[in-house]
Length: 190
Image 1 (cartoon, rainbow, N blue to C red):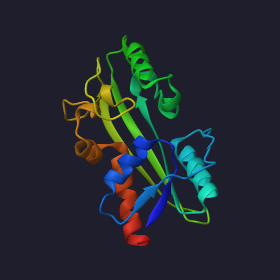
Image 2 (cartoon, one colour; image 1 turned 120 degrees about the vertical axis):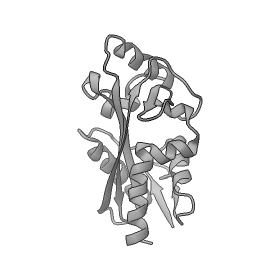
Image 3 (cartoon, rainbow, N blue to C red; image 1 turned 30 degrees about the vertical axis):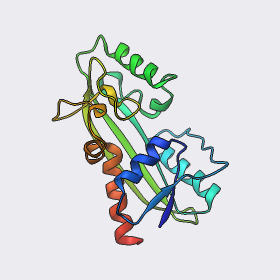
């Protein structure tokens, strides 16, 4: 079964196809004309908007996620604006490290909300995943993307970028949200 995954981000597409290997589901890109406006006030709203746009473009069952890093000492920032927090990935990391310099509280969490629409554009399932940790004082690791090199996962001494793909997929916010979504798909759709 093929489901459109509402993204233009090849890293995300690869990640969810890795997590869902063996499920009988293949996620594909929406195709030409996919240009969602992410102006919602919550991860849920943005996830829905992206799924709706992917459905409009493809006419197929569509899954979207919206995710971000929420840092306690920064009142939940960058949150919804994680992707637009700074220019390059390195600039995002540099900015968060600089903003956290005066803080001792470095608690953070990654949040992911996924929304699944049927081919007619109706919401049929929403799932959420969180991964808790803290922001390191310096970056470490070569795997992953975004804030992974500075996010130390709770109960480990590793950043997400220090983890193998399998390790990360088992504990990540996206992995948890997708596990719930795959469970739903297997029990209700397949």
